[in-house]
Length: 138
Image (tube, rainbow, N blue to C red):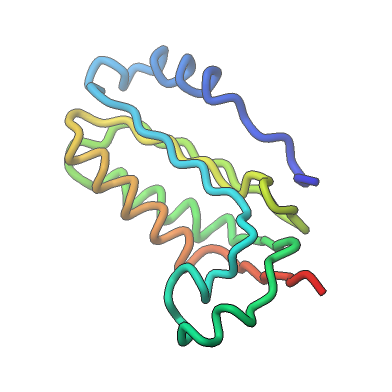
């Protein structure tokens, strides 16, 4: 069971469109990362094919993050061209398959800028700000 209550994207978008930055935003894009049953090593092709079949399913995920690193990642993303609005929510604790891990909302002027910023920010969060420990089914 998710440790934190997941945010409402309707509420987030309503809030974003009331923000003073909204007049500069032509697009909002949302990322919702969830816990999946397939191990990261399997979906990212980090192990040989013959090992994939032996890999147990993920039962849960122990998830934590460094809030200061996340804030710095957000600050850096605001420096990207055409980005005017960012909101991030991260869960924590033992999460079950299907639970929300994170939500990221980015608003900007045009699609290429927003897509690039979303990819950069989510990548930075996943690679430098969080600790994910998969717990496998027995």
